[in-house]
Amino acid sequence: MYQKPFPKFNSYENAFFSKIKEELLTAKDHPAAAIGLTLTAGLFLMRGPRRFLFRNTLGRFQSEEAQFLKAEKTVKEFSFSVDLMKKESRKLLERASLAEKEMKNGHTELLDTGSQIQRHAKSVDKVETKAADLMDGLREIPGRDALKLRAEVASMTSLLKQQRAVLDKRIMKISELGIPI
Image 1: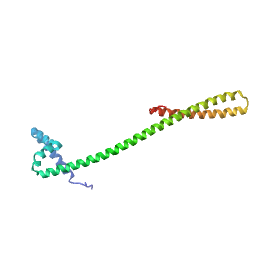
Image 2: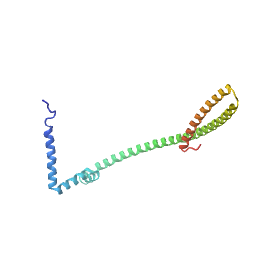
Image 3: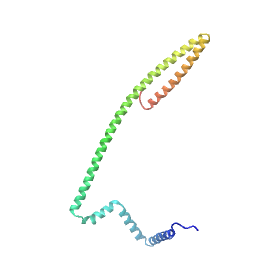
Image 4: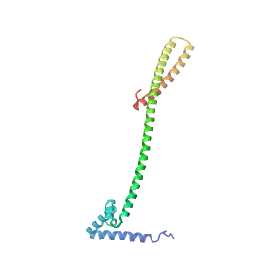
């Protein structure tokens, strides 16, 4: 036969829910008391009213020396946290200045690289023009040797066009970053 691991669990569960049901019925019968208890509990759960009540009741029983020691301890903690914030601020400012320097260096490197790519693209364009002129000249020459040379020049021209496309894409990426080329 199957045994439940917690045989009393059902009885505790029933007792818990019956108690809640009973309290809800009591709250329904006495709404003013329920509202008062709810507001009081809410005020005690909030930090501000709880602190106010403590200072005006139990806080009055503390000696002046105890209050001074507590205030002194709070000032030390505050001073420690301010020192930590100063150190953290210095670190963050140093990191920001280093990042700014790296960004400026990267910007100048990107400018230099972009202009180099631009010059290279222009030289590729010039070579393509020369290859087109060479192809025109080879078309006028009859024979197998001229045909082989045309095929060779055509494959080189194809490679140049691919390289030119890659360079143009890179130039566009640099331009999209806002770097003038």
